[in-house]
Image (cartoon, rainbow, N blue to C red; front, top):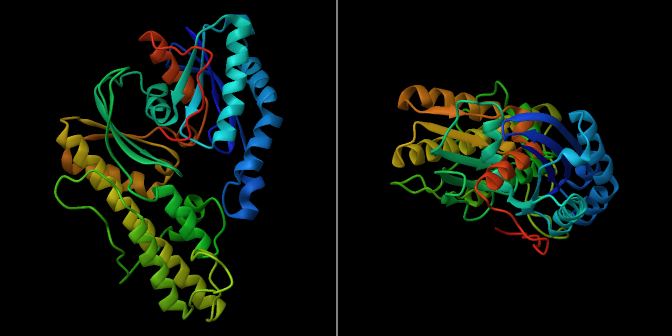
Length: 351
């Protein structure tokens, strides 16, 4: 079965063709990072406009790269949510038009479930059930994936997602956007030393997450270390700091804070992920989403895996970030289970 996937939940316009839910024939992604970088985060209206500009070109490229004609498509998968409502509507509109023209079934895919199914694209031996940890800019969630149609939410963040915390702390430290990448670069090879930021909700068998306290702890450390206070004429706390120390000292202190922050986030993710796998008797933990490309997280997971005897499965970095191949893979599993949508389905900003 050939499934065409479309992904426009945030700031990547993506289209892909996947065969039988496992083999990627094409995977085209147009990123908007350069558009949003100057704002320190994604601007929803700009994202929607850029999706409109790129969607038809990306879809044509995906078909060309796969070497197939439009009429060979058996089904269509498109991200229905969660995400930015304007961005989602661009992809959904394109998918509905394609479905109507071809008479092919369409599936509105949960973006988080798409991340989970990215693992199937590189592991022929992966099978149900398994526990999955989805860590991205907007979401930090744990799932028990029992089958194509049984996906149980085990825990989620109560406030900030891990990726959102990375972005806000990077902005505070004046490091730029996207936060995960720049903080990892700054933290590489750095010992956080005496700084130990809090790890929230680590007691008992708790599977929810919370990163707002960690974010606040970083803010307090920055104010103390750099002798700065809130800027009364700028609303909010997480704007770039104004340094009151020499550049050389500040640069090293920023690296130490970045390393301590990354250490705290990855400790929580690894502990909660393996805790859930043990609780639900899974010998596999799938870790996916944009933050799953973090090298420190991967290294800690491998170390913990040796201790607990649970295998961590990380998709490649390309498949961790938003892409349409994962949406097509998830849609393939839905089509196989007989789960499709009528053409009146709408976007869901939250799911």
